[in-house]
Length: 491
Image 1: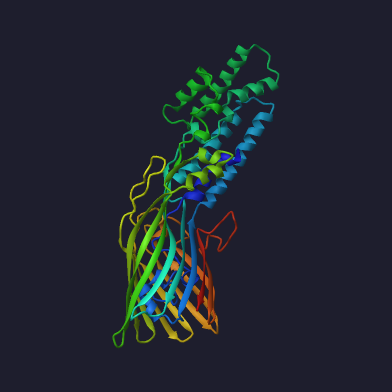
Image 2: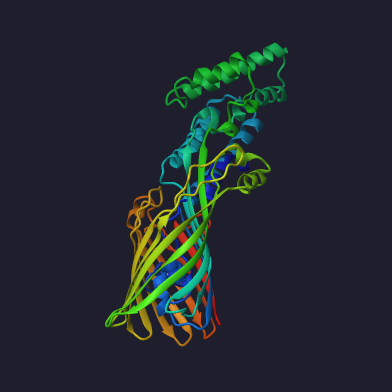
């Protein structure tokens, strides 16, 4: 029962996502407020700004392994609400089945109505686009080599998510929102027999009709829980036809019409970077870009409640997403980097300035609409006022439509260096996100780096505070949190 009742929250936890405009790649960038366009200093420049590669000191070959995970959510509180509703319903049914009082006692009907109102109120929240989660993933492996005939060449492969997953419709009808055991003719019949009912089967069925009619009339009185036409529909089924509601294909939570549409796209990019450094006197300028092959995986589908209520729901979900639609295209990124007098650097990165559409293959008789990777623009600056300190700033200029991505963000960061240790902190400010998630518009970041001659390691974390401050209590998860890391090897 518990699994069946909490499935809609599970649907949201696992599959509601909407990628932010510019993914965060690597531990150094995340720890410094998501900055990197002007401050990148290793082979992850293939991702952050290939025009900066000519200005990065390195040996013959540098390899970087990077990963970043950014989760924005306000779903955990609703999961708790479903859990509490589950517990209340189970307690209610236990009381009705074990009590010596009448099945249709007014207090029981009132409790059932209150339970419906509780479930429907939670579902109404999901019907508001402000409920959900955003999961942004960026991982990659990058190689930078020495200059070749005046040009810098680098290679890389990365995986970034671009997933829009949203509630298509929410069904809050009492006929399909709350479990219907309370209106089950079989359950009522068993209760009457347990209490010593004496009479013929016809008289027993008439008594069940009377009990159900009393319950339905009470539910329909005052602030009725029925939408227009629902009372007549359920009365005809339960009383006139004497149908069994718990086995019907029309009623009960297992037949809830709520649906989550999944349009999840994973992009695996194979990049070749070419860049050139130019000395223009007081200004050193870098220009460059990436030519890339983009392999796409589309996990489009629609999920309904019954996909989650089955005892083998994990297998069902796995089967739905183990065979995605595939397609590929090519794309071009362009970038610029400037190193000015006074240890000031500036950078511009435009991902997917040119990108073709991905036409998906057909699976199970269905072909998703063609998909075009979005153009993403980020501007950054970095300044080193003293030899052991760098301060950074990035601005995401991308405007993306979506419940959690119709935003621009600004990142500020700092790095202090002492011997081989790097101490980093930062903040990310996403103004429009505060309209949807109260505590997610301001995120604090921190991290540590160890930079040796042949190897570097960076780790970081970020978190938004809540109304009770910073917490990882599972009942009050932060509305935004993330982790990232990268490891570099120099040959």
